[in-house]
Length: 105
Image (tube, rainbow, N blue to C red; front, side):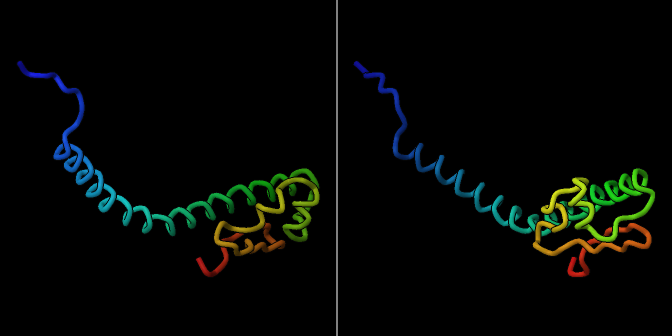
């Protein structure tokens, strides 16, 4: 008479762990190379947001703000939105109201 043991054998567990290990080895290096790309894309998105707030400020006040601090003081942006995810401050040119990514990117 055979017993019906429900559970995994040691061999089945080792096979599952081997498959998981191989998947981790293949996936982790791809994630680390994408992080620089993600930071650059996040910074570009932040520039778009700040540029739109500069345009809104110009429409409402009739002139461009003197600097990004003026935008933050009038609650168009937060103080955090003056800095990219890599820690560098955005570059702002008040003559045209343009915002750009720091030259390091």
